Image (cartoon, rainbow, N blue to C red):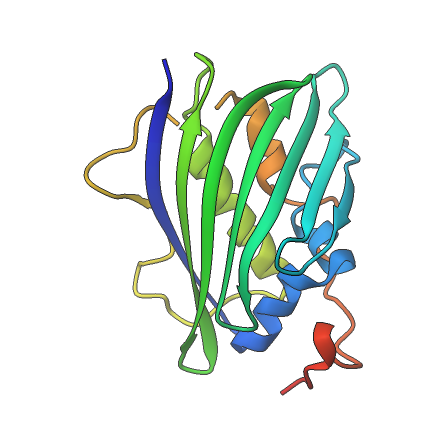
Length: 199
């Protein structure tokens, strides 16, 4: 039986939208914050454009091979990213989702609103899914240089229409952007992807 879940995760960052957006658009930067936990050693291929494809593949020691395949449906620089993706464990598709990332000014910083509409295709435990998305947004915060301005308590995932069903196998979490082996701050020199100047 397919299980469905829709939830929203919000997080506030201390840097402006152009900087946060760049962390999603730049392949080298995204590999640092969305590369999974230490020891997973993923390979990320990112073609960040409308109809572009992103593929992340890796294997945790003693675990199944993980593959995330995404297609970008809509991109408005520093405003929104919409993409669909699936997750495979040892070539078994366990999850399909539509994700929307919105970027908005929040004082001197940025609020991200991350909305997921997911279909879980196996009977595995799905309780780690929302927690993993929150961990990914925290990892992005470390990449961007630390603590954000006060988010008035709105930086946690919250289900829509009541609690989400128990959310895919704990191993699936590592595919969806857990803390990378290194959260080193990226070099602030030079233009952002697409030639957009830095603030």
